[in-house]
Length: 433
Image (cartoon, rainbow, N blue to C red; front, side):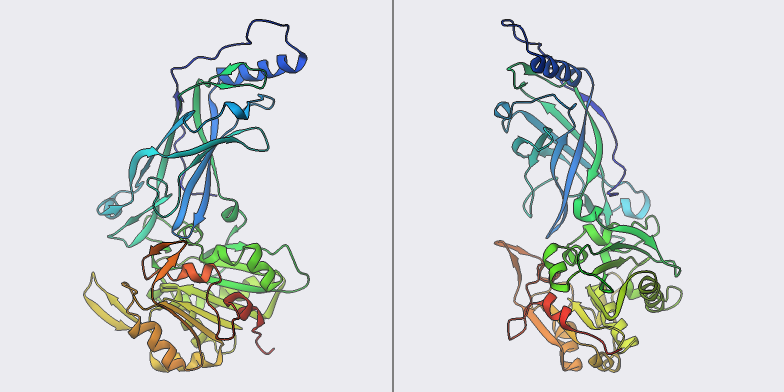
C-alpha cells in the first residue's frame, strides 16, 4: 500500500555483537546460526511497518525486523525492553495545508511486547487504539478540511542483546526503514475509470457466477485536493469500505465486489465542473461491464459527504440500486468557514429515494451534521427507510465523536426491529431486472 513514501534511514546502535561462546565444538546447526547471526550483526537490518485500519483510522501497530533466514533467535531472550522505538510524522505538504495542521508528532512509541513470528523474524508490538499516541499514519489539514498522509520516519534502538538458540548473544548494529503493509488495504487494487475518477476495488474469493457490488462513498476528509489525489485515503481514514471486504461481510453477501471511488474534491461539490453524480454512475456501469457483477444487486453506501451522495445517487437513478445506506448523511450543508447554509438534498429529491430500499444511520449527538435537520429529516421525508439513531458512538468502552457512526456500519451493528443486521438486510435486497 501507499501510506506515504517513507524516508529510509540507517540508525546505528552502540552495542556490539559477540560470537559463539567458548567451550564445546559447534555443531553444523550452531555454525549456521552463528554465520547468519554474524551477517545480521554486520549489516543494517531492514524493518517493515505493520499497519491496521482501526475504528478511528489507520495506525502502525508493530514493526517487523527482517532477519537473515536461519538467524535462529531464541524467543525466550526477547523482552518488552529489548528495543525502543521512536516515531516522527510530519505534514509533507507546504502552502495552505502547512498552516493549521493537527496530528504531527515526534515521540517515543510504547512497546507492548517483542516476539517471533512464524518466519522467525522479530516483531516489536506497539501500543495502538483510540488512546495511543504517535501511532496514526495521517493527520488533518484544518484549512483544507482534509486528512493528509504523514511522512513517517521510524527509528529503532536495541537496548540489550538477544540470544540465538545456541546461546550466543546477538546485537544488531543498525536499522533501515523499509516497506509498510496493511493486509486489508493491500487486498484492494487501484483503478481509474474512463470518467476520470480513481477508485480502489476488492474482488471476492467466494461464491460463483455474477456477484453483488457494494459501492462505498467516502466522507469529506478523504477527498482529493489541489496538492494530492491519493486514493488510499478512502480505505485508511475509517473502516467504511474495508468492513464490506471482511470475511463476515463476504459471507453475508456470499462474495461481493467492493469499489471505493475518490472525489477530486468532495462529493458536495457535485455539479459543474465535477459532475460527480454522472461520473459515479459511469464508473459503476463500467465496472459492472468489465467484471462479473450481478446488476440486480448493486448497493450504494456512504458516510457524511458520502451519505449525501449515496442518497443523491438513489434519487438520481431510481430503481438502479438494490439498496442505499446513508450514514450521518448531509441534506442541509452548513459551511462554518464560509458562514453559509444550503440545502443539498431537497424534499423532492428525497421523495424519489422511496423506490430504493434505504437505511439511514446517525447519532443524535452528532456535533458536525445536525441530526434533526439531516438524518432525522431525511428519514421522515423518505418515509419507508430503516433507521438506526444511536444516542452516541461507543465501541469497546471508548466514546468516539458523535459524527463517526460509520463505525457502527463498518462493524455490522445496525439491526432492524426483527433483528436482521445491516449486511444481511442489504444482501437480501434485489432490484427487479
